[in-house]
Image (cartoon, rainbow, N blue to C red; front, side):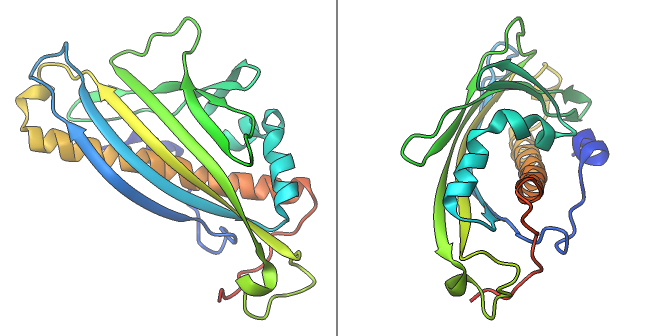
Length: 234
């Protein structure tokens, strides 16, 4: 499996730099095999969960996320991003491929206003753009858990940490349909499946780690909150 996205665009994040570290959980990865025809797409479906820790009360975190026009394009770099509507963006994810077949996905995402503390992100059409050989259905939700700092860490540094820490937890339901050329369908279906599973995990993992770090960094710096040193959790 060769991924130019990983080779050329990845940001290697040392755990020491990711002070408010995120977790990554992958669940429910499946693929629906299609007939050996370029007219029928191969369907991949995965669910992912992740979280990031923000060293501030939930009210400050929600205020920051509400103003995504101020930070989204900046934090998504080096992905190419352009606004396409009030809450929508077109993202160029990167170029990746295998077995001589390569795609460069471009997807439209809408960051919906929060609803009772829940943020949702969904795919939207990009004006005047028809995806060449692929379709993406991206449905994500974010929620918040505010935890007293005294319960979260052992011996916290009172000078650096606020009274509460906010965990932003998100869940992603991702469906990708790829229309492979005929020569790909000459390969074993098990190989197509394993390769598709791997590339899906790779792209989501890479984007998740990048955005987690950049959003954490941008949030803390924009509010003048220091990124604290690592502490031992309870």
